[in-house]
Length: 248
Ligand code: COA
Image 1 (tube, rainbow, N blue to C red):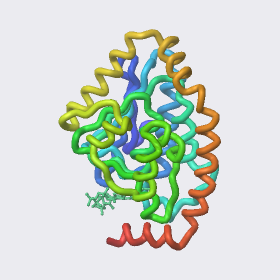
Image 2 (cartoon, rainbow, N blue to C red):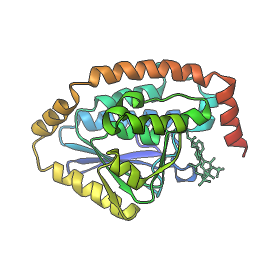
Image 3 (cartoon, rainbow, N blue to C red):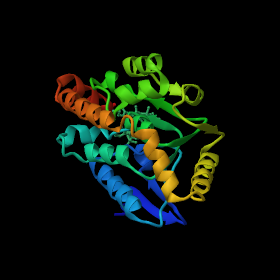
């Protein structure tokens, strides 16, 4: 389950998952999504784990999906990324996340499925799908509106622009900001530890109550998004954008 690019360990009742591909700014490959799913499922099944904590092991969170992977791997409903998103959306245990540096594409949209997110002040967020000939994924076309309001969702998804940590905080995308990477990891870890003092029953029931109104809708929207996303990936516009990035 542990690979050189994703590894996890239980520290008391917190299961800590680290993304570790610093040379590529933690861009996520098909194999990495597969590994993330295994860690999530392990944490969900392990009765000693109460809280899951996701972070990277370097200054960046993630530069999004690996753009070479988009060209090399066929994307369909059975792709690891789809399984990853479904698993993430369906987690029953609370998920705390610490981010910093690049939080691009799925590196931002996955935050919409986290229960508590702490960001380093240097975090640069973007969902640049539109600039790559792609369309929103991960339930973001619904969840971003619900979490941050229609104005922000339209702005971020239609322009694909980069925005900074203060804007993410004021829009409600993240729970708190920390001065640097180290303090962000500490804040997130301490919060996760605090949560473990509560019983699993109340933690999971509270999360379920917070999510139960819209989980079916999220899964439905993710399916709809995946279909359009798959079509977009096949366009010359998208392929040219990936090749341009990889050649630069
Ligand atoms: N897929 C594959 N490789 C990626 C990557 C991605 N999404 N993002 C970064 N990398 C790689 C770069 O190719 C580079 O590798 P190299 O040193 O072997 O050439 C390394 O990570 C560092 O990236 P670089 O672009 O040199 O860093 P930067 O500080 O100049 O720019 C970003 C940082 C995040 C702005 C830029 O890397 C970027 O735009 N990445 C693509 C983001 C993206 O479009 N994600 C997909 C959204 S759907």
